[in-house]
Amino acid sequence: MLRDTYLAALQHDHVEPDPEALVLGVVRKPMYGFSSVVDKNQPALAPPTDLLDEVKEVADDVGHNEACRELRFEDRYLDHLETPAAQNAMHDLLDVLQERDVWLVCYENTEQKICHRTSLKDELQSQR
Image (tube, rainbow, N blue to C red; front, side):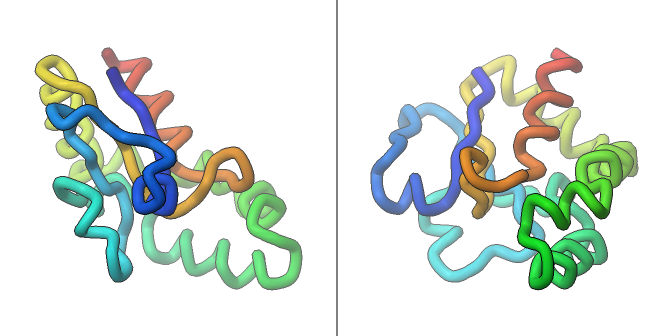
């Protein structure tokens, strides 16, 4: 099964992945404390740095979600998933999913903010 969550939910025990599951970070640059709650991180599945920087810059004026909409974040992230590095990482992850559950982890609470995990999860599920 493929699931997703965010750092604070793991740190504060709001979710508890099965011990057999792979808890996979999908962030470009792990912040302090991130590595202690994930089994490993796969930066190839994170949004590209330039896209993240653009979102942060625009979000200062209009907020995170509006910045994502204005910058076509989801479309641009899906384009990124077509790169060889992302394709290889997704292929590897699909192999893991045949054996065990996987939790995708980054920083955003998707109940409040747009996050690449939603698009990544949808893309992986469509390829299963």
